Image 1: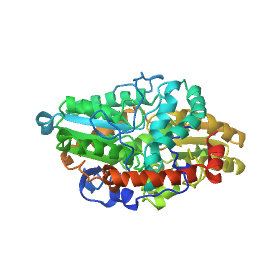
Image 2: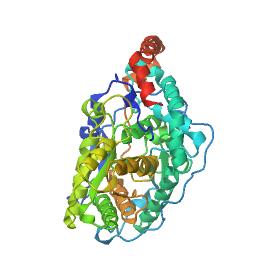
Image 3: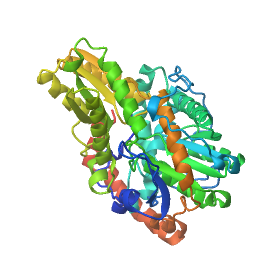
Image 4: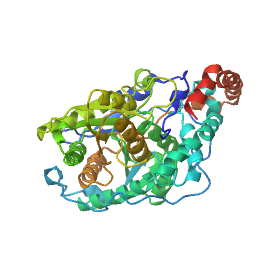
Length: 484
């Protein structure tokens, strides 16, 4: 199991309730909320991106702040999951006869993703980058100066277990390779729609880092940029974290601060995405002897309940709406299988979104379910949480619980209909690009860090509180139960 979110280890964290809600309600920034099954025209929706707690100061490739990365670049590993070709997708292909901006602007598309270790030696530094993110481990303000030491401690303790998982899928994550293939396929799809664009890949926690991609965007003198996170549903721990990094970089750079940008913050409602998911599910159902008896089991990556209830993260609502849209599309085809949604990958002693995937699998077996099709609905690329956690851990648990026939829907990867729809989303987003999309004021925490007196006081009291926290019986028990 990959520790892609470890905030659950810390029971007392502080959230900014306005952070996630601003994504749904705010107005200062330009963003795109992609059209749903009922919507066929591109729409523009304003959105406020508020900076969250700042990580410890570090010099990035562009002079901005960033969590550090290891010193050397690695090559991607794993087999090819995508065929970089583009198929015509029936009536869902949108015809774009003319793009005047293609001749006037040099268009760039930035794909954002989590990243993953390329080799087993990369696992510990990758985990450090992950846990050093204040959107993953959300510390109270007095503890923010300890973000790095705590990340170092957790990553060292967690690395051996994570290495076992990556070793079981070939010795590294295939995410970088697949994302590069998706970028190539998207570039081809855009060209087929008469839009020439450079497509870049920026990873949050491993190479190629977001900062590297932005540096290349500057070198290429891009004049209009679409930011496309490869997360269908928005969460402050995924899309939110990546956008925060971009804001920090753009705010400190004169060229970037004037660059027109459009951000596609979520796209789970898009018809092409929903149809692509329904197609994959229908294809896998046909492989069962009795397809009508198969339980469709949606497994989504979980987040702590406090993200939703205290910080206003829309992830849970968006996930439930996403499942509804996919099921409705299946019903339109006469597929009326039972279905359920559960959340995987929880870590730590706090409550995460329920129901939990492992618990539900056991319950389904006890209720007599014999055939089950797992659908990894949070992920558009194969990686450790599909290849190891679902394909190995959950499959074994399901079979032990009495489920006899197991199947799993593959990730979308470079499915032609999916890539075609992403191309349509990019084209629809271009007219909304604005030079103010990345302009945000510094957070209170960042302003405090610029004041040496306030920073020294915060460091002193943070150190005292950290000692109490880290050596408390509850924290020691948490490390014992969840890291080893």
